[in-house]
Amino acid sequence: QAQLVESGGGLVQAGGSLRLSCAASGRTFSGWRMAWFRQAPEKEREFVTQISWSGGDTWTADSVKGRFTISRDNAKNTVDLQMNNLKPEDTAVYYCAAMVTFAPMYRSPRSYDYWGQGTQVTVSS
Image 1: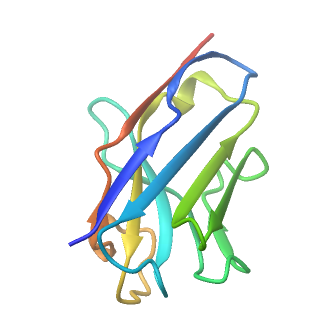
Image 2 (image 1 turned 90 degrees about the horizontal axis):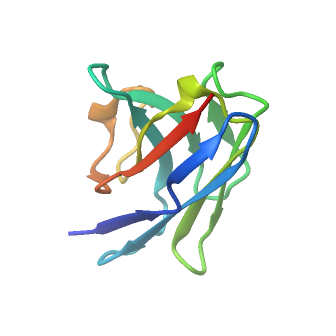
Image 3 (image 1 turned 120 degrees about the vertical axis):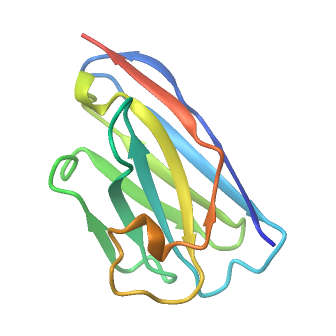
């Protein structure tokens, strides 16, 4: 089993920035694709961004493209999400997810094997 623990959420004004971090433990991080999802109240969990094992490839939802950047440090087993120019509509619980076995439907939560507990991000207008 693997454990994913997110940190870095909080309250920020519109236009501000936050950096989320996810630390993996319990199993090797090797080869995993990592992603961030978010879920707002009464909405389905939504894909935000994914990064390949090497870090050389990323895929990002149009709603956050140009504002959010995913990165990883394989030596530390961490993946970060830098969020800039935050908007009220970015308010949600943000989840870190690990794809152990490759699945082409990377935007689907069902393609991921491990999840963190989530961290709240609230953007005030």
